[in-house]
Length: 154
Image 1 (cartoon, one colour):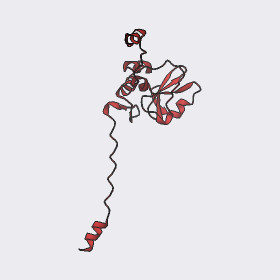
Image 2 (cartoon, helix red, strand yellow; image 1 turned 180 degrees about the horizontal axis):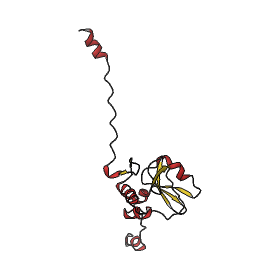
Image 3 (cartoon, one colour; image 1 turned 90 degrees about the vertical axis):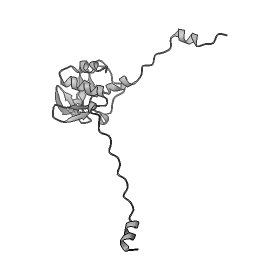
Image 4 (cartoon, one colour; image 1 turned 45 degrees about the vertical axis):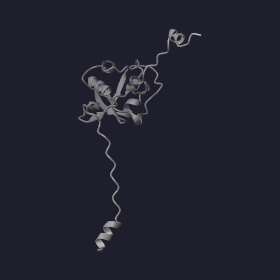
């Protein structure tokens, strides 16, 4: 056996490379006014942001895409951590909304701004994920008639 065969056999195989994470679906991507793009949680959230960029109000843009926002001034009981924000999450203020683009930028008055400048207002109440409520099925309590019909006649 020649020495190059020994070297080849003694050299461990390189570990396989981790598969890259799949790219965001084109329907989840939003082209931003500054030329960059951002990924939303869902196609509905991406379409809502695009509608807002197209001139709709925040509330109308989300409603058009079957995403319901609480009225401005509503206390935020389940806030999204700012480090977890993605395009389409919404900042609730006492009298208006702001749309997050990522964990570092937001859309305020049609302009891309630093996230910290948005959330520093004393009127800021918190960040929400409008897709979270759309994904949760509504629990409908059984009617009294359903409860009595389930009891076997005795």
